[in-house]
Image (cartoon, helix red, strand yellow):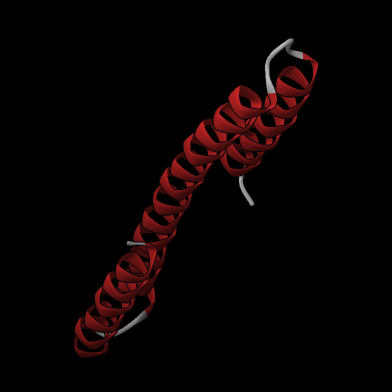
Length: 95
């Protein structure tokens, strides 16, 4: 994992921990606390999906660049098509 990947993971985990601590110590009713936890969980899921999509796209680009340097042209085109198809399938799974 690259430095940016660790940073993103650290931000997500830190946000989660901070949110839980803040919510548990806040003087609110149980209903308000549950609603806030639900809202924060939704925000974290959205952020995690964004980080995953960013990392997937960056990995795909690095892979395609490496393939261009290592494979003959015919094999490259076939491999690029497979990579694009796989990336589309992964994106559809997140939806």
